[in-house]
Image 1: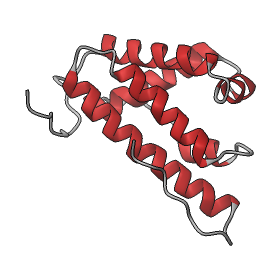
Image 2 (image 1 turned 30 degrees about the vertical axis):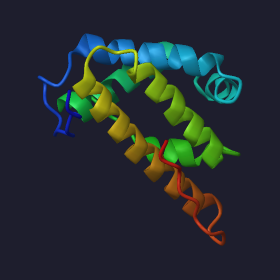
Image 3 (image 1 turned 90 degrees about the horizontal axis):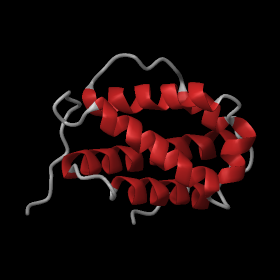
Image 4 (image 1 turned 135 degrees about the horizontal axis):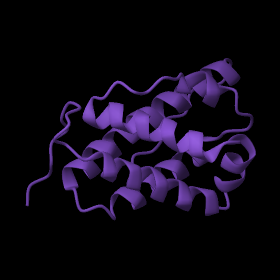
Length: 141
């Protein structure tokens, strides 16, 4: 079987049910994680609203919907003490979650987007928090 190719957001790429499953399964895993769990639990006060926001975000990124309203960058930059290891752990858990899905095109696109998004968030975080330090890239596992 050939490797899927990255595609523009499109409703045929996946279903809303798949996105909902991805978001809920990922956060179930992340909330139990010894590194990420305390961060999420310390900063997400309304999980139901967070799930809606994340489902809307991934629906926009994967299916091209326009329900998402938000600005993820400032919220992440405001978090204290983030490190490349935390972003890499986020990516690792995300990939573990997508690997359990039966839609290889969704998996490939979501993983590609997550790496891009994580890298941009980490780059901006460093620029804002550590302007005098050399930038450190996320690894590609």
